[in-house]
Length: 546
Image 1 (cartoon, rainbow, N blue to C red):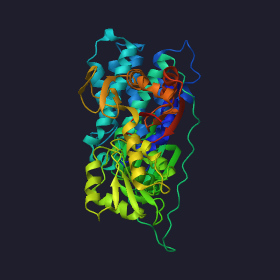
Image 2: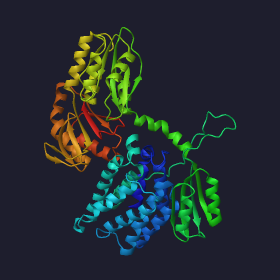
Image 3: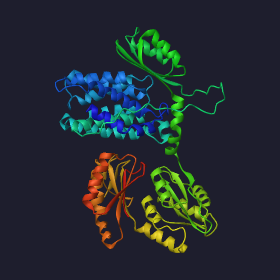
């Protein structure tokens, strides 16, 4: 279970790094959690079948503390410590012990933080413990741990509503997501699912700040991340904690009389290290420049947070048609660019461009006439209003209510060689005839053709709108979409109107889910299968007959 949890977190390391904005946007939560858990595997990997279960979990918690990195690693180690104490006390881990272990893990992690905040990993841990505590023991260990995983995911999705800095950045809490992945990994290990192992992440090499004159010291905003192990400290842990918290921010001091993990953010690492040396024998010393880490990840985070920018790919010649397309997510931006778009309005999955942005893009694209693909029903009115406010006959809006209808229209786009009306009619015809569906996660309770849909369930959407139903497994949603909606339309192949089925993969899709989708598609149709990685979050999978 611990090996699978480590591998599962490691698989998401870079995604966790990209989500990390609190307490400091230094982009290292995924790395810290993976290194922390790697230390656990190295210690407990030699455990044998006769070792007491409680002892294994206790050694795991001790290894997590000793190998913990960053706030996220220390908090996870404390969660594991509380969890292990309950398992060791009971001498077993089953459905009767799991609720107590999760509650103890939540409580221990809460006590590790001097100023706990809602919307963080602490909230996720508490939500999971409270949810599982309401379940009867009769449901069994597998179902109980599965319920814990589902609640963890749901709690993570709620974190932006509790912590404004997350909502502003358009991300969830990275530490909370890391805990959810850890629990999912435990469940995979319990079920015997093989998660490919990952090597420990390499230490990030951050750039040296540039642009400063000789002898000038750059301003320090976040300071330094200082961590070390204190062996046999001369002062009690409580006293050490109080002294450290007076020296900086986010101070964490956890451990025992023999070994204490120290972690703090401070402006002067020398003062912290001198304090540590005066009261203990310190090892595993880590000092990292938080400002340099933040600068190294700022550009990537800005691109994922972008709320809509006009991006010129290539201006059209004065005698050619030009094309403007709304591209939600970097994958679709790359696709529309490769299909010949002259100008893109690049935005995130939930942003609707303004009238002014459409007009700016139309002017930027140049050409003799501009065709506009809004690619979302909510963006269509703004596109039409933008065209109405420009000189007559300068642009035409193609009604593309969904991004995949926009892709279908792009396949019929020609910048020259045909009359404009013929091109417009052909693109609109292709958009209207496009056949597509998608899989997403429901953000609220709702209804469908098959009955109620609960918040957090996977939903299958026909044509981007009609909800076919909700499921707890993404594979079941895909199966319904293929069987009940797309499969009856595969007959168009016989008429020579379709050649392949394209699956557009979202950012949250996992490799094992990809494999299940591929198997379901192979069973449903003889169409050639093509994959496109969109890296967008609104839909886990999108399907189009093309």
